[in-house]
Length: 330
Image (cartoon, rainbow, N blue to C red; front, side):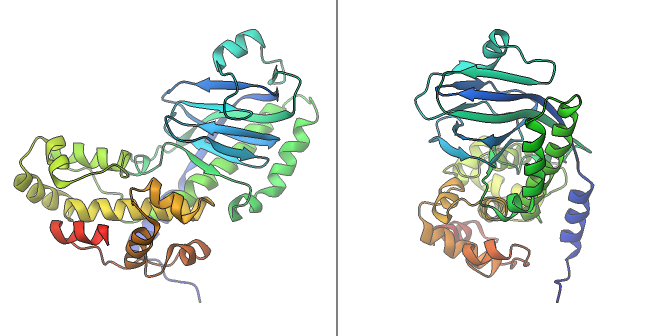
């Protein structure tokens, strides 16, 4: 029997259903190893689809993420990044590469050496209507969906069509690429954001608390404490805790814990990252403490949630700051 959605879930589901992605294809690149390019941070959201071959994605100081045929990379905040054929290959700014190897009239570009070939579709996108800030902030800097996810397998016919179009230099191919990218990106965002239920707060009227909430959403994995949060808000610990609860409806640590776990649920729904990796990405020191906290909120362990992500979470997050801190560490 289908599960009945709660009013909050139904509102979020309706919002996500209305999201329309408008993609712009920058180029279809044919790279020969060795190759590498970097893209600086910008306000434009970006995506890459690896159509053939392999590559490595690096964001900030994080370890390179291997990519293979069928993988989709979404950078919803326009975060700067580097993509190479393998870690350690020489890297150039993408603008310099395009200046030297211009994109042709069909939106195609070739670059690199004589080694193994990789075909990559690169583009940007915006959303209509735009996401509310509280949902946009919930999105991670990079969302990588590999070809093993159920979502990508569902999109395999579209990937096949996309690959078919890359074989021909027919006029209008770029427009077809953009329409197909609309589907890939929209489904990735919807799958991840479905886990945000309950965190889409209305505008927080207290400026100091609002500033801290924004920081928590952008970096929930950081080593936050009540004192650190209070400093970011420019308040004493006692004043901050009281005002946070009044504005948000939860204690600071309870909100942070739920934010981390719902971000983890997003990764479980939309990626094949291991539970250990998701624990690290969401601020947990080990897999055991993460799994225990996740089970308390969602009523089942991460692996079971991944197989059936739509079950309702338990409303079990503690509301007292000290007990919430203990809850997070268990």
